[in-house]
Image 1 (tube, rainbow, N blue to C red):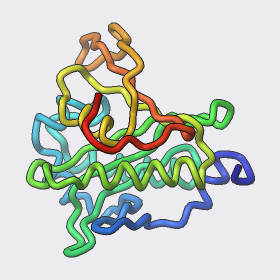
Image 2: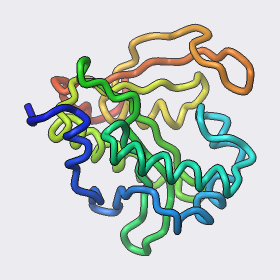
Image 3: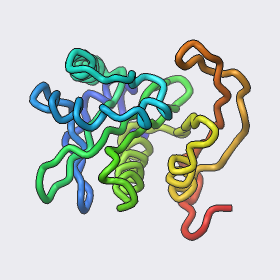
Image 4: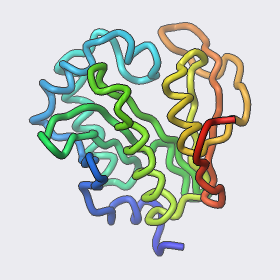
Length: 197
């Protein structure tokens, strides 16, 4: 088990996190125009809880400041997904609702429309899971998905997450109650390879 509190372990992370094709980096104010461009589509807002539509430059600036502040405090890990070959911002990923006592966190992610179907999110999720288990000492990483978000469900199943159940009217989105599907992967679970169950 890594030493120190979960907040201390988050603050000690060495960024960026690198994969074969990607870098996961802290949001930077210079990325505001790219963020606005990528998040100007209603479909990303449709499947996420905290990304508004339309997405404005002030939304992006507030997000960047909040993400950096939460990382410095060890309270959260919101990262941008950057393609290594051309340094292009393609999406975002993070570990949220960190619990030291429960050794758990929630993973969330989004990807710009033109970058889908190339395995980028799966690669980023796998990198974040490794960091979460090995360096942060998490035991459980969970994800809440709105029903109908088949792409996100497929990513989670490929990453070895298990569907645990349905939480009826669990979250409010755009003033309406929404049901959430709950998935999790434990540090003791073996990664699944092959087709989902």
